[in-house]
Amino acid sequence: MTIAAQRASDQLRPAVPPRRDLQLERAIAADEIALRFQPQVDTATGALVAVEALTRSPLERSSERLFFRADAAGLGERLSRHAQSAALAAAARWGGPLATIGLALNCLAADLARPSYGSWLIGECNRLGVHPARLTLEITESSLVTDPVNAAAKLAWLRQWGVRVALDDFGTGYANLTYLTALPLDILKIDRTLIAGLADPRGQVVVRAIVAMARELGLAVCAEGIETEAQLRQVAEWGCTTAQGFLMAPALSEAELARYAAL
Image (tube, rainbow, N blue to C red):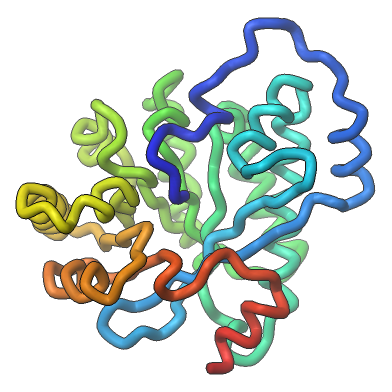
């Protein structure tokens, strides 16, 4: 996920009891929550390897605000399951060059807190015909702070099915180094704020150090927020395996994604 701070849905917790949000209830029930898919490309070849699924709605200006609004109305679980099911259904429909690409789903604190989340996700994969090995769950530090031991156990169980785990927004929190050794991770996603600072020599040192550390830990590295050819060349040279950002493509509709993949 390409934001400079923790996801609003995790960071901002409602201080009052849930209040019904009829607009959002209707939007979910009527399947009016749109999905967009932002490409992730191989830095060495430029090939499309995966997409990150993102929600869109006219009710809120961003996916983060939409999930916070759902959380405040007691609809967080419902919206999350709706969005993840819709993304899996979309991936199941894709053919041609999209038939085997990866699908990254944002995993919130509420997801990991649910005892049945892992079995539900694998059940949806089976129901829709999407192999779990195509999935990556993107988690943030804030989605782990309530019970990191329990979260690690759930993620480890999902990895047994082939699901990969990415630590998102790396560089925006304070306990990330601990999570690098405590969690069953496969991918480290460098936050866009660090990529934006690559014009500064000190910023370059930081990103190079993060990539080197991740590689020593056996993790793949994805650079978020790539906007220039110079940034892409730098992160590729340092060892980032994938990249995501407006240089390649913004978040796309399914039709736009099909055209992008055909290029």
